[in-house]
Length: 75
Image (cartoon, rainbow, N blue to C red):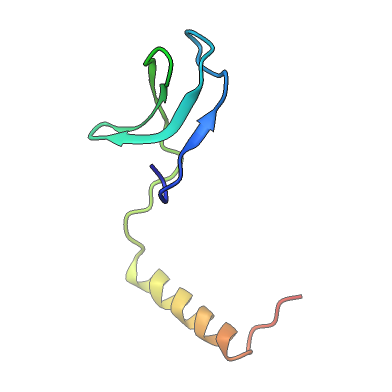
């Protein structure tokens, strides 16, 4: 479950054409599950961000600080 909200895909189960719920996670990773027949399918991880290097964090903080001070303008 992501952010406390459930995501449903209606009539998308490949086995029974039932409704599928997304965002379930167990020790093996993310998966989707059919509410009618229980079919499970593992979901691929698109991007996994663990930790940013310290140098990258410093750049982001500096950029955010400059933006807050009005030094960076967006067009």
